[in-house]
Length: 91
Figure 1 (tube, helix red, strand yellow):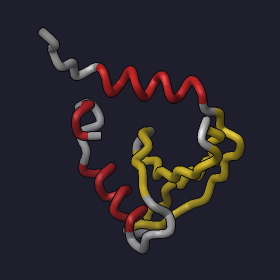
Figure 2 (figure 1 turned 180 degrees about the vertical axis):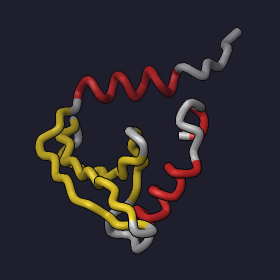
Figure 3 (figure 1 turned 60 degrees about the vertical axis):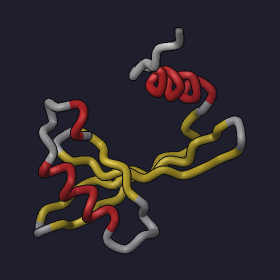
Figure 4 (figure 1 turned 90 degrees about the vertical axis):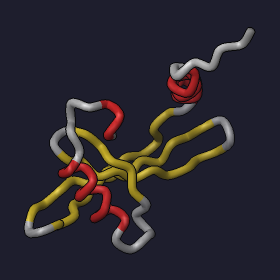
């Protein structure tokens, strides 16, 4: 009998991460409610070619956002401020 494991997606991410490298990283800032936050945009060289990922840093954790989507990174900052940083499921 096959049992579903909640660790399988994590193992998949680890396996894919081992095949990808960060080719470039750019840091910028975003202002939300008069506070400055760091946005990190990385170009990842993966097995199927390069792709970009952006995340907002809030209290030492990164929250993924779409930099080209208006308001998405601001929403990521707000999600980060509301998240319980000690609860893995909230991130």
